[in-house]
Length: 170
Image (tube, rainbow, N blue to C red; front, top):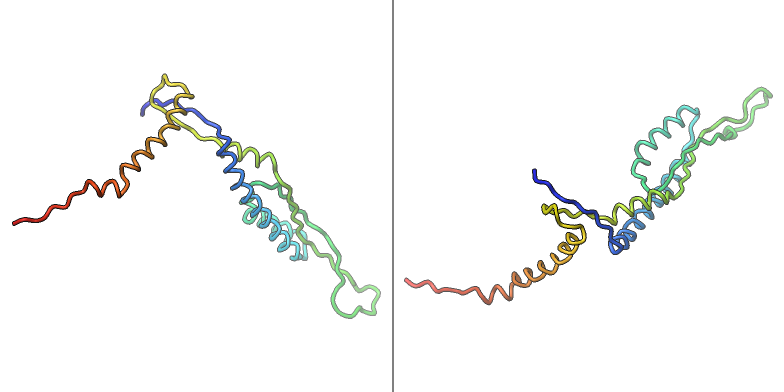
């Protein structure tokens, strides 16, 4: 293995590009959270333990992909009237307890900024240990111009003018 010199570069232009893509990810993530909120708020559970199990299941599967939001899941306790005609007996229960999940989400600006900062950086390396970081970056930027010149040399109209067709003679 050969020793290498690394330099980390931060780019404002790259940051602008990444801001657009990350904002799309944040928007789709918030839509997904809204969908999950609607889905799980409709479900009711007869006991508290089942509601807790569902929270664990939700957190491990559905909320695992969430990066840019802080999500809290709470259990709401509510009383619902039992269906049917009320009994004439005074001791009969008219209400039953129900438990449901409530998902609350909030933007995590710290995680968003941290990810944006890491996405706006790139690493360059060189096997010349004496070279400075500015020179590595300068060489990297000029490399694109050289590649464009090679593409011009490889272009089909230019290459076709040098290709000769020989006739087969017996």
